[in-house]
Image (cartoon, rainbow, N blue to C red):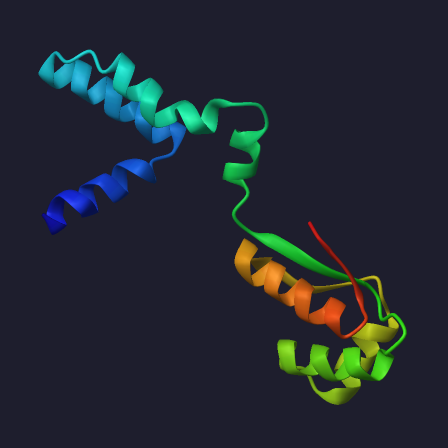
Length: 125
């Protein structure tokens, strides 16, 4: 049963391009017309702006400004980035600055939440 679950997980995580390639292979090599299955698998990603959002897998965290509690933000930036105290202060003083680039959405959201709790203004691009 675990093999079927793993297979189902792979199918669910296919991109639209991969679904189309799979449909072509099933048609060419096995004579199966998988039009209904392709629509069912690709359906959720086919609406409106969903494909654009799906393709974006990395995000940049931008520190817009330190806010009211600059010292707390500097300390947090130091901890989050591994920079030294002076480098973290320079980054905060130079806002707007890119804090981290190419991070996963979950990590970007977590960084934003932590920084906003410290008083900073943060943007995710």
